[in-house]
Image 1 (cartoon, rainbow over the protein chains, first blue to last red):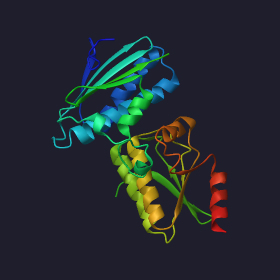
Image 2 (cartoon, chains in turn green, brown):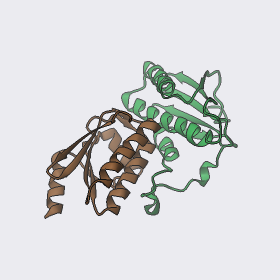
Image 3 (cartoon, chains in turn blue, orange):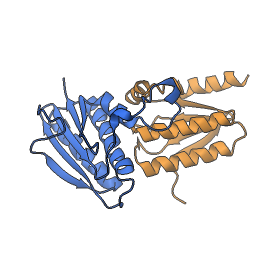
Image 4 (tube, chains in turn purple, yellow):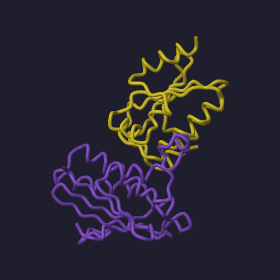
Length: 142
Length: 121
């Protein structure tokens, strides 16, 4: 693995608009390629969940102040039992460490704030760049 | 008005809600579902709501957020919300987020109806 956890060498690149059909299509493409590379059904569930959370965060939070047609950049690379996906928005970024723990009793009734923890729970590695506008999700089949 | 994303039925004094979509992921759909269920809650004196997850394969944290809002609104009116028929992979999401501690979750519709009945007496 590269020392820079937010870098993916020689990725496939997609500029993704905020369009539900296009979002579903790119997630399906990535999962199909991962399945062809030997990923199991449980991995597909985990990958779909993490990608949905990351892409939703990019558009809903990252692009909150931007025009609707500004795209999010997706980079992905599929290997045997390996998947790396970067989701990079054009927003100001955020500090993931500053997010409150949604599993604390006092936060259980709050309707938001679970996306990042779900990504971390289901992926082998989740890394943000310093600005906080690019996240790399890594899945490794054991 | 947009098309409903839910099947709603009244059974033994309980409002049963079933999702039409297998994936509860799209923010716009989640908002529509949340609004529709909120209208059901507002229209009931003491809402008794059962959400049947039988058809659901995937849901996102935004969908969990909508369920929490629905739960909060139901409790504010002194009502109760129960969830049933959740796929094991999705139940795992509830466990990871500890939302299995917040919601009343039942394996089957029969179990959920049984709890509604015993709570009534």
